[in-house]
Amino acid sequence: MKLNAGQITRLREVLEGFTADAVLEVLGLPAWRALARNETTPGFLATAGDSKLELLTRLFSLQGTVTSAAARAVFGDVFESLLEARILGLNNDAVSALVEIRPYGDETHDWWVLSDLTPGMNGVPSPVRPDFVLGISEASSSLARLTARQPIRRALDLGTGCGVQALHLSTHAQQVVATDVNDRALMLAAITAELNQVEIDFANGSLYEPVSGEFDLIVTNPPFVVSPVEGDRLVYRETGFAADDIVRHVVTGAADYLANDGLCQILAAWVEPEGQPWDERLAEWIEPTALDAWVIRRESVDLPEYTEMWLADSGLARGPEFTRRYEHWLAWFESQQIASMGFGWINLHKTDREQPSVRIEEHVAPVAEPVGVEFAAWPERLNQLEAPDLLEQHWVVAPDVVEETIARPGASNPNSISLRRTTGLAPTAHLDTITAGFVSACDGDLSGKQILDSIASILGLDAAETNRQHEPIILDLVRDGFIVSR
Ligand SMILES: C[S@@+](CC[C@H](N)C(=O)[O-])C[C@H]1O[C@@H](n2cnc3c(N)ncnc32)[C@H](O)[C@@H]1O
Image (tube, rainbow, N blue to C red):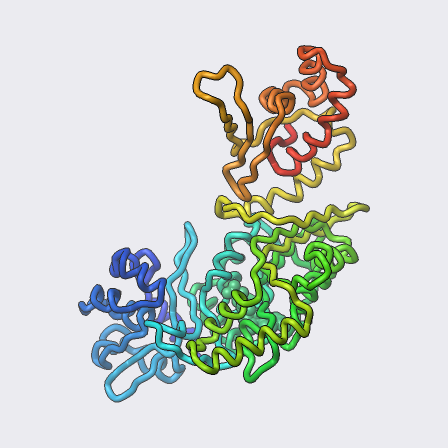
């Protein structure tokens, strides 16, 4: 699949105006939502006209066919090159897309992303090739929202697939390196990059093998399907590594490739073994790295649900083969002493602190997207927690904090007071009366100790004891971003 620079320029000109917003407009919301469920019938009804936008939508979004005359009218002199490059196919007089070109973007960019065609349109199972290049998936979007977006020098997209993370990284990194073990992925991602006039350095190889130097940010959603070896493996979701070893290798290798203060963010799944708490197992991977870590488990999935999910993802319809493999997977999980599978976010931060901060927890509550703002703020919060005397600091309430009180109507005092942050992980903190008074006085004027001393004096409490009791609570408020150093 080769297009020269001139042909890519011509293709870009043809695609001008084929944006995510334009596709939504031409389809209308119901047909657009149907397409998100892989149903194309409403979409075809909405794109029966002969405008360029309708034709491109029918070809690349709905996987329909158009006549060669209609295709020539839109693609002009680049039509033959697209046939040669096997981006388009011609069968009798019907032209179809052989790869997907998906309009995509963020708040300020419109991009096109090349991948293999979405399988299973209209519920028709379609087997995929082992080197299938997955398009933008829920996992891709989840990793993109998880990423800390701040200006950086050098970023690594490990396992780039269709190149979607590399596009996002190019908006805030001076240099982006993208790797994969799948040649087909690298080829499609390279066209994606050139089509969008974004410079990305591509390298073929496993894990950190093809890269050198240090990165300020590493992002990855490695193939994390843990399953018995059977038949062809799909490179986008399965690896030659045992169980969840690919995730372990990403974690244990990160320290060597992170610049000081650099972040590694992994959208991951991990084995939860019988007889060992999941967090203990992850701590065993993390602690020897001497990196700060903040692991958040979003979900723990039982094995039948996990098996059904991935057998369906491989396009297997229900029937005897589905049942045979279902049984085989469950027997294999049992033989491996796997109890469940965890899904979540692993954030690592390179620090020169003697005692890195390792926080491994569950957070299943909804978050305020993009959750990446939380992880962008995390290293600075760790620095604030390092301050020699927390209570001597002057604190202010973070701008995204709201207070929620619950009381019987007409009651003079609330039954409960909580703080909630409205961005990122959107955590909640339940406060006692003293802490509520403390937070309401955090306007930066008085130090934490001065505030606690005056509350103790008003309530007739021992000041030293009040300070001692409330220091850990205040530490948690700093750790969770409710108050920040002035
Ligand atoms: C789940 S896809 C993610 C693609 C892309 N990052 C995204 O966000 O959509 C995983 C990618 O990792 C690649 N991969 C598989 N094994 C790998 C390895 N050992 N080292 C690097 N990449 C690998 C696959 O080819 C695939 O493109």
